[in-house]
Length: 287
Image 1 (cartoon, rainbow, N blue to C red):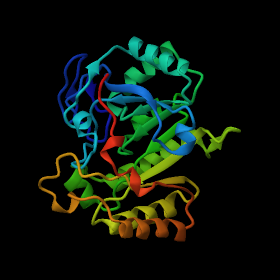
Image 2: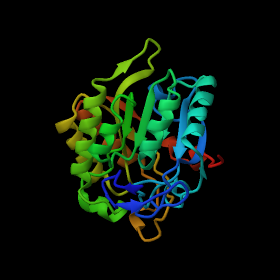
Image 3: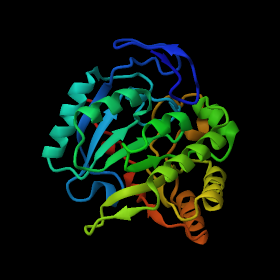
Image 4: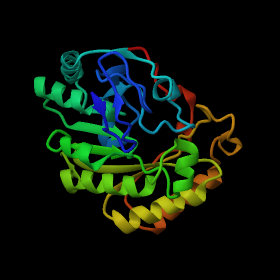
């Protein structure tokens, strides 16, 4: 295939075993882990966990990614769409609340093929960086029930420095608008589990509270009724040797400043505890 699935539009050659371009990924699904996952937002994880499929690679590849072994180093095993469909069924049989596709963008076509083979009777979650092409998201209309996009930056210069991404703010705004068009307002079951909708995630970075306040301003202006998940789990990890400002955890004072602003803007959603900033919450990439 000649790939232009993500906003980078590399026109890279990718086949079942190898790939070029920014992500350097094969076109067939490359998997790092498939397992029930308990550490998503409460209406996603519930009591039985979210059925997380961690795909290898990433179209954003932030320097501070705590999952850099799979996002940057592409650790994982290649499978077929038919095998992916079998894994959906296996997770469903384990009693998870949903099928959670983590960093799925490079494999959208194979995911659609797998869901054509077997569509679980569970919500399908698209858990991504938010840096998405609207044209690619439109392919997923009718397949995805819940979108979990990140909104990482309010400053395009930060996006270039940390993620080598141009026009990040404009691209992510357009992507989330398309996600909301597809899902409509959030819907929950009797048990409080999410059935449909969008939750926008934001990770607070050390020394960058101004960036976080700017992200919340953008969300308030454009998506005032959309749920927000404020994340305090930043753990120094990844490839941050050249970035001194990223080489520590966030402080309680930094997090409180951003969280209070979330409340001041009257945005609804979730706020992580700072105790989540711990390497023991990073999964084992053992698929």
